Length: 115
Image (cartoon, rainbow, N blue to C red):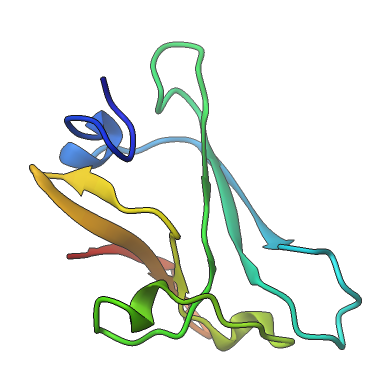
């Protein structure tokens, strides 16, 4: 069994490249001037197996490095304000971790796992 509570996530355990579609998503879909839970929604093709895509949703977070602070959603009106984190832990390399993304003003996006 794989998943947030299983033995591990095959798509996270080894470096791979996937074709992906990334869009900015709002948790509630409020007008832009109002704070909302914002974050990237990533659809990775073939990540769940041949012909099966995998969706990863991250939300704006407090951004702290502590166990609680990094998991708390934070409402924002400014999408590039980042950071973003998964609300659930995933098992990577046999250890639970929270996935996070840190936006950059220029250049390529950077994604990481926070243990």
